[in-house]
Length: 192
Image 1 (tube, one colour):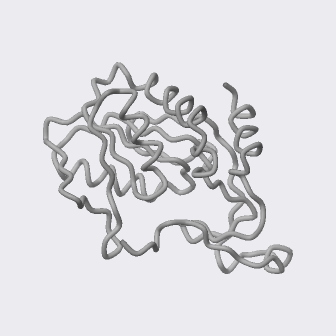
Image 2 (cartoon, one colour; image 1 turned 90 degrees about the horizontal axis):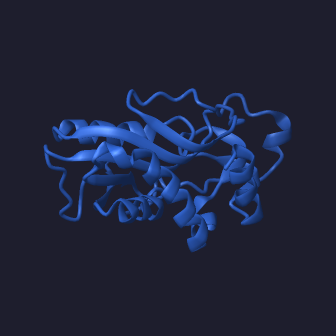
């Protein structure tokens, strides 16, 4: 599937929206990808996950980990298709941590999965969490790369679609965007 095909599925399911959004990274953008809206359809979750699983199938993956909340549904399906343990990390006191009794073993070959990457901050934190456990990071797989290929996780990485993120720092928000009511749909500040 081409980038255009993937993005069309996002449009068709209402998962790509327009307005004034504050992204998880803190940037302001006129577009937001709400992957939960596309992943609610099993055929798309299965399709997207199969594309990531197929890309990393030869890496002998033993564990899939995703940052909460956005990556959980997708990462779980990738793990199911690879038939491996699947866990997620959560933000606690502004740091990614393992909770709920989850463990990463030094012998694990780990695939990090995320739904959308803009700056890559959450994925980088999860990669650091994996490295600190002594396990082997085998790659990062994600659906949408809003960095248009500029984020580098220093491991094999694969996205299903790349697009240029239109984003502005809080100090650079243009007048036309400031006139639109702001929404902060990300999950970084959810209470857990």
